Length: 305
Image (cartoon, rainbow, N blue to C red; front, side, top):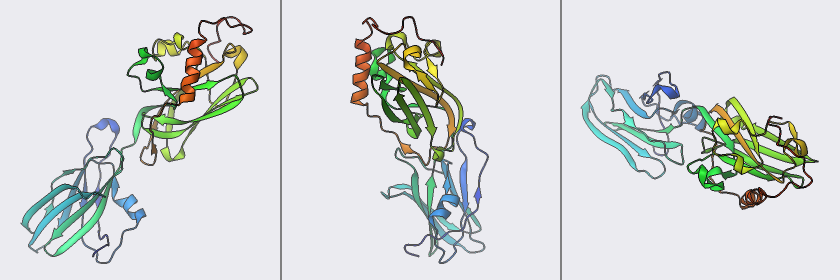
């Protein structure tokens, strides 16, 4: 059996939801099938679960065999669980074994059940549950890096120059951890258009989306709805006239605030690296705060577009 995965299993799963507390154990009913090799598709469909605990069931019948069970993390072969259950007959059921979800995910484990001279080896993959009611924002610069009053905030805004035609594309970052799509900000012929696209791999249900356009960082004391509702805003895919709607500003910070349910397991991990060019534009915005808006339309920007 060297180099081959051999397994037959029945999985007993309870109905789960994110609000239901700790996940129950997956119970694998394992019997040897000589010569059967598992494909990646089979492992994905039958040996990949979001539950935190694994339990193994094995029917020895009338035989009496010494049973041992080990679980190793793959690929470093760290021992997660190892136990000698002694001589067993009838139906063997193991302990419930906790399997963590590693930072780089997904959790991949090798399980070996030995009954006498017969060793049954199979993989087990732990994935994440579907995340519900989570938030996503456009990638860029964290508000905490823009001003000290936003300390502790992980939300990001995307700084864009309005002085020339250009397009900025940044990731749509869900839960501060996953790339769930893309946000494109286009400046063309005096108009700004923000387009949000969710990656199909996220299998997402978008509950709500707000796109805020910040032309004066000083107007935002915090990221509460009380202040956000006073900012100019727009809808995905609809152009905004820069002269009339944004008072002819030179720089805008686009803040996409999305609420969604999604599956994170197939998504790329997001790594925060503040863009130096965007930081320069934010400094430019701050430097222009006290300058008179010569040649720009007077009055405050309209609040909705």
